Each structure stands twice: as structure tokens, then as C-alpha cells.
Length: 355
Image 1: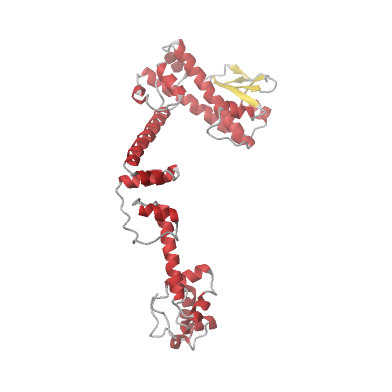
Image 2: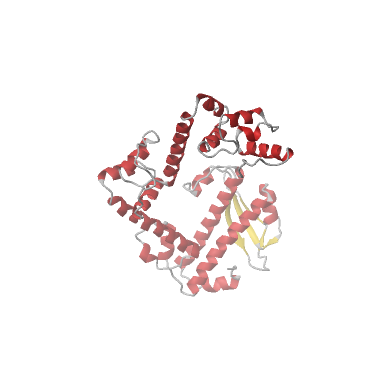
């Protein structure tokens, strides 16, 4: 969508009543001021969050505040800058501390406030988007395209959106999308509440100890009828008391919990494999890094690549020869080193297995 021509805007606005005109005008000014405050706060490095009001942000800014951005229309320059230049776009700003007001064009606006062109560009982009929303509302009004907001009044909707509907103005596509997101959240919360009621008292008490996001994931798994056949019956209290209790209550595990149990089981198996080796083999493996230890232990019960006879005459590290003598698996880089030595000595031995 592109901005409406000024004459087209005036034609539609003439069809609005005074309350509708006042609402639309004030709403656009509020949105433009809000956009300016956010951009200025970001430029100044001031931390803001979605819970902060425009007044909260303004109180943290000792600076010029944007009052309005006026657009005279395509190929028109009805406004003037304080420097005397005629303008299409006029930026009206007010000094917060002094109350002084300036009427500026784009160049003076940038120079006066010492803002980089990138910030000015973002300001214009934001104002343009707000004007587009205004024009969208006017086009919908002209075409009598009204969203049935009355069917969503049971939701916790923003008050300005309700006010807009009640004065007889249509909602923009972005506003409709917001209503639909709020409704989707409401319907999901209703479904999660019903799923929660299906749990036993003990299960409910357990689930309430979870974070909101974890509780949501678990309840949706309950809806899907997930069965934890992934786990063999075992005591997981050493892994995690909370997870162990969760399984005992016949509740599904979250993905991150499954991963934690898998890692614990793997670490437990590696410890068992290490203890199954001779003390000399254990000492040799423990000389490696933790990551290398894990790789070697995962290969302990697999067929060995080489025998002592295969490598005894090859020019390889003594550590590799000792490792083979101890009948321990090799790391990939060690196998490559042996293969390289074999090639230098005239080829592979018959007992060498391919990777």
C-alpha cells in the first residue's frame, strides 16, 4: 500500500464525524511521539522495555521531544522551517526543560539535534509507516470494511484499540493481527487449563513448580498422549531428583530433560566401561582430555583397527604403539597417522580395516 494523495485523505476525512477525526488525529500524533521517543532512547543508549510508558521514557530523556511530523503532500511545500525554507515535511519539536518549540525541515532537524542521518532515516521510516496505517484505516472506512471486534470483547485488549472500534473506525491489518494473537493466546491458555484439570492432585502440585514455558510444553505433551517408553525403569535420582519424581508420577519429560537423561546415561556407561578396564588401561585413557576419553570409551567394545604386528615396524609415535599393545581403540587422527606410515612403507597390511 502507498500513501493516499492529500485530496483523497481529505475526501474520506470529510465523511468522518468530529469524534472520529479527533481520535484518528490524536492517535497518529501519540504513535509518532512514541516512535520518536523509542528511537531517541535507543540512540542515547537508554535501556527501555515494553512495559515502560512513553512518559517513563520521556522522563529519562533530557532532550528535544518530537511533537508532530507534518506532511504537505506530494510536490507540495506548504510549511516553513525556522530558517525560512519552504517544506513538504515539517518536524515540530519541543525542548522538554524550557518548553521552546521549533519548526524544522529535515536538514535543520538533523543539524539542530546533532543526530546522524541513520537516525533521521529511521524517524522518517517510522512516521511513514504510521501514516500508512492511517491511510489504511481511511480506505477501510470508505469501503466499509469493519473487523467484528465485538466477538472478541471477552479478551484483554488494548484500550486504544477498543476506543477506535467504539468510535466507529475500522482496525488496521496490524491491529487485527494483534487481536488474533491475543485470541490465540487466550484459547491456548484455556486449553492448557483444561489439560491441567485432567491431572491428579499430586501431578498438579508437581507441575505448578515448573516455569510457565516448561508447564506449557508438558501439558501439550499430555494432550498428545506421550508415553515415556524412551526410558527403561530405573532410579534417576542420581541424575536429577525432579526428573525422577516426574517419571514416577507418569508425566512426560520435556525435550531438555530427555537430553539431560541421555547425557547422564552415557556418562554413566562410560564410567562403567572405564572401570571394566585394567588399571594400566585406565591410567592410559585418563591421560587424554575429557573429550578424547569419551571418544575412546565409546569405542572400547568395538573391534580394534590394528594389532601389534600391524604397526610394530611402522614409523609412528610410541604412544600409538603402546595404545595398540594395551588393546585400546584409537582416535581418528592416530588411525590416519598409521595409514600415512603404511603408505610410506609400501601399502596397507591385510589386517587393516577400512574406516
